Image 1: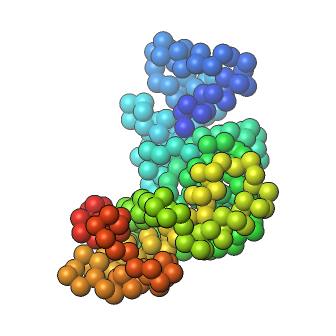
Image 2: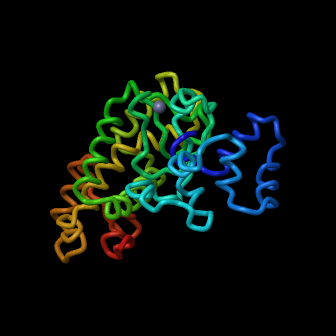
Length: 261
Ligand SMILES: [Zn+2]
């Protein structure tokens, strides 16, 4: 079993292992009375409690069989992503395991792989070994969560991601992002998708802006009548001296409308 695996992914692997046609197990589950988790527990000869612990959402779907304590500190079960394919292989789960994931699961520190945005296949999980700024940003990301809490950080990260992608689309990128892109693209990640490469390259900038947006102190300045100090911080710490301006700038738009609260 793989922690936080989606029910769909687990059923697909169970079908593969038993040479059953895709979709057959789900159909069978819909016909069999009783809870899915109990039936699956019989099929794969795993105790209910282990399944429940690895995949709390599977228990939750089934009439409150789940022990709510298993959810404490677990991931918000909304976003799906691929587990690190090398971790999945090490679990004897094949290389393609879908899990419930969150914004901070951007890299696998054990295997030095990008597992965040844009990774739809194991090939997209590109090596970040040549780019130590990405693991450094990930540690920063975790520190922000410690300081500002999960909810504030999640909202700030989403806002920062939107802003950075819009800046990227408007005028490509700042020099540091372009530098990370070149390093990653030339270090054997040629099979990774463009989206994964760009997302990994933008990640340090996204985290940097997340820190400013998640801080109540800086957010207050940003939304005040005198946001100059906030703009200076953004300009020097991540925008290479450029100052976001104009009605169409996504950061100025956030400053005026504060979308994430
Ligand atoms: Zn891994």
